[in-house]
Image (tube, rainbow, N blue to C red; front, side, top):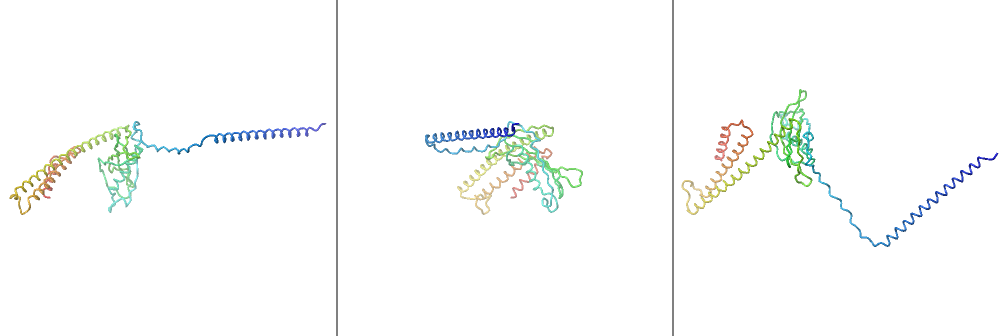
Length: 321
């Protein structure tokens, strides 16, 4: 009987030798191809002229992060709430919260809400419509501040901030104060940007939106009245100084003092001093009148007799000075 195991072993050894020989030939062929490609590349580089060094590509400037003004934002997307625990460092000697500290917290909450809406840095311009309900906040109370964008205009927005306080062991919160803050969003280059509009959804949000528009109209009216009053004050001031200088020139030409005004003093200082007093009285009267007109437009309950008495009082004080 033939030895089959030896035949099988011989066949396996021959197949393994064949596979090893074919693998070695394949590796030699690939190495030859690589050597020929490297030689061809070196010949091409030697034949080509020397290339001039190219400058590195400049990195593009970072894109300015500006909001898309065409996409309206909801009011709820800008809502921010902060909590503060009142400690002795926040209060006066009597244990009552300092009003300046409360205003600082309100400004921070308003700024966070404005930056959440604009996705940019925001700066405070005006604080308007401050309403103090109950400022008696003491040590240990928890203050909750809520800020939300009521309305967004072309480049400014109004952020409403409400403050509530809760005492330990009390049944619920109590209102403390509320105010409106006007913010402007700034791009990284420091310029104003156009803001996305605000879309109110609920009845409360629509009410706050309309009130913000009304306050904006009142601010614009006030700015217009102040500009007109400034023009009138400057015109009146020029007229009085012109008349005073003409009087001084007349007295100097005459070479004698006015007997009705002369008390041993030079006539020119008397006339100038009189003109300055009249100018001060006029300035105080116009300023107080403008303030009372705006107060009457915002608070109709203020009686006309009170406004007249305040104006007369300010006029008398100016005359005494």
